[in-house]
Image (cartoon, rainbow, N blue to C red; front, side, top):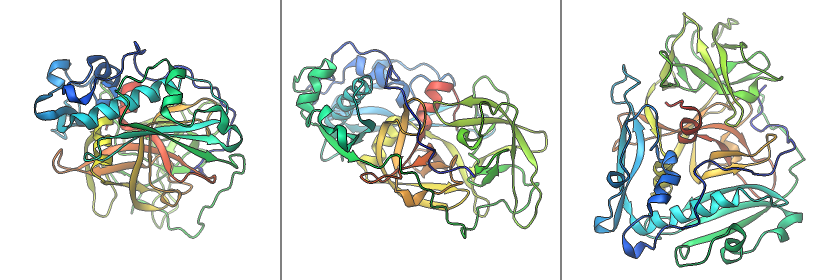
Length: 413
């Protein structure tokens, strides 16, 4: 079975983070009602800026400082379900002070993940509310190595070649001590009723239902699209496939009240940095842009980094549809997260949300989503879930954010 948290493994220290190298300048102060263009370019991909499936946007069109607000791309939406190649942006107006604080936190966090600091476990940017206009950087450290990290942001900035110039006044640092990372346990509820399709020849196949690999079981995502592919694809958690390579391995679909396990696709792409296995469908099955089977939820697109930050600022919940635990919901705890405990190297571009109770073995590959009628007619995908914490000191689920998957590999919902 595919564990909701992988076995701990040795890791490489963080090297080069996602995004353009910084030139050392931080976002300008919010009183200027302006956001530094280099900050925009650094974070543009996370905001859905550099999609191959969308037209190129001008930076000047991207920002609007009038009235103390900034226009951000909040979501990328497919307006025509029959034409996945057409992707449109959906925007929101956000307070300029809040945007400057989050941008500054993203800059500090990007530089932080380049450092080689003993005891570093994970980190994320946590935007504050719009009224608060702040952001914080949450860092998990092994208890025995806490002294290797400064206790506040003022002490950290010199180590990442940044000066305190007023741009970071609304940014804070939170350090969390973690322990017992090597004490790995599984707490699968053997009595849990798996979330299955009602019959094996269902077509299209919805996301959020149980699937089987050659080694285990997991959850299949809604349809993934790629600008260079003619057809949608299936996807699930790569760690559900044991061994050196999953290429060519089958993806099967168990159904309710039957032993039939039809092969719905074969793995054609492995994305270790995202913990995602992409499978091309067989002729008999079609990946569906929907979630669940009883009351299907159409999937209209995905959130950008700024769309996820907006959800945090507004106190919105996200939901998950998993093959083991079904539907759960929780708050987002951090964006642009990096996690260094379940792979040989740190995984970046992650989303933190919920609690350990929101995910169990077999839920890996499930998506986190949120319906936002102001942005789209249907659900927007936030992330693909990979694992959950199992150690004292932290309590959340994590997985690759949809915008990061697009930025790094081109796939989108």
